[in-house]
Length: 159
Image (cartoon, rainbow, N blue to C red; front, side, top):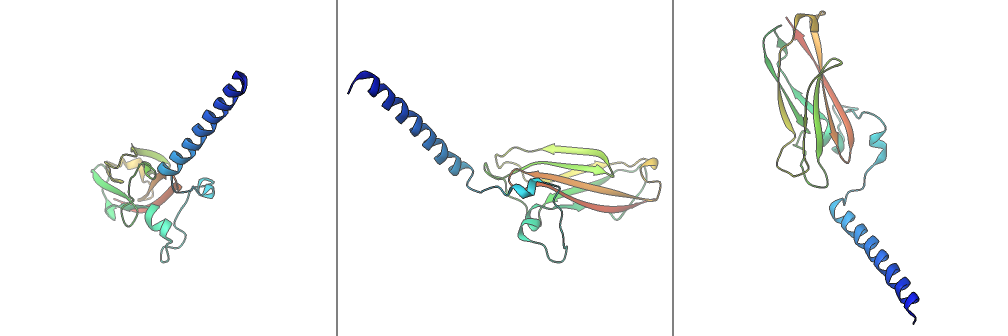
């Protein structure tokens, strides 16, 4: 075997080994395959009485008083999933957002370390002009790295 053939064979072997190791490590850290259709739009619960397992674990749940007063602070709790969504290096909630109607009210970004739980409490104070009709819609969004963008909303009466 001459030197040129040896070098070509060694280079090809090194590249093939590198690609193989990359594929093995990708499967180790990202074992769950991603459903690309979940990224084509905003996901919502379709039937509240008959939720799918994916809806049960990814739809934001908003806890808020049924009625609030203008100018007084109240808390809005947003939890991801009926059973709290787990956080791991391969599957995590990237962020949770709260909007009052179409206006952003708050956002928290999360890391895939497992230290945080996808549960957030926002303190909100509504001005009089936010609810001219006597009610306001609170909208919670969350983004899961494997299951896309999810939304839930709740109406609150304002006095």
